[in-house]
Image (cartoon, rainbow, N blue to C red; front, top):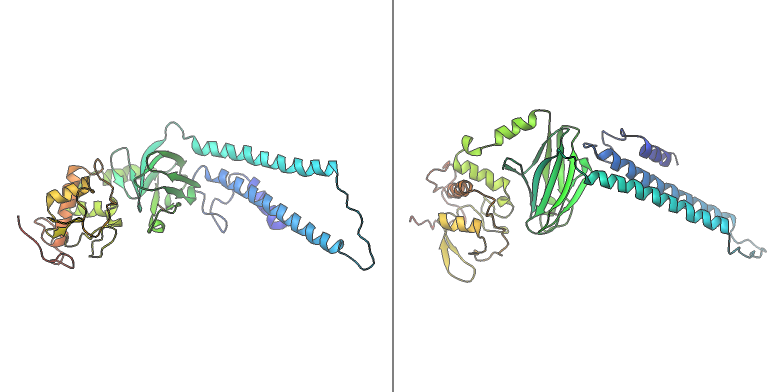
Length: 352
Ligand code: CUA
């Protein structure tokens, strides 16, 4: 009973309820978290209270009014207006309180301030991508502390759900439409993003981080990641794009076949196609496969790749091509550290 009272008290106990996280809930790292937690603990405490009340009364009545030797049962009363009004009125009042309270929290969670910083979120099997107003695309969500951030989210394939427990936000990400959610992070640090809607094989690996920067840190970070081509070779940029932009989810770089063919040793390889014929893996085929993935499907694979048209610039596609070359050891400008050709490559390199 003391636990229940403690929970009820905690639910009413102001913004400072559990800011550090603990057994019950994760750390409160956003503006909206405390309000959500209070409502949660109120409903939880209320449920525990009535559960205990009902079970205790039931046990007491069962013991106290059990059938005894030589005692005839008394006729049961079948109507009591005062009692019936009470047991209708109290729950009615409680659900009205929960509704009004919940609706208020819901409105707060759905009304971003006008000055919110906007980030586009894309869900795809099985990766989150974050596009900033500068055009930079990242696999993690970087935000400044104490700044309202509005996320405009959509999916490339199936329904995903964007879930950040520390911020108490969770929103479905649906193909063909935009869903929105906002938060204001209050504690610098790193927080986990989950996908909370089952979306296939690697659903539980569909993870990302929210990095909440100290004042000034966000601008510094943005300056550093701004132009990758300044600090890296094209092949290195391609390798980074491979990891960050979702290629790695389906194309391995170590020879293992996955949802799509491996990238290791594929350069220059004679690729058999679904439905017969074959094509040599060279610049134009790679470019076409990125922009129009359905045009030529590699034999043994399903046509499931989304197009990257409008999502990778020409410069980035060229970088991807350089990366593929570097994976076969045939790149003219690649780092050249890879071994010659491994499994799958078959040494089928034909110099055009
Ligand atoms: Cu995406 Cu589960």
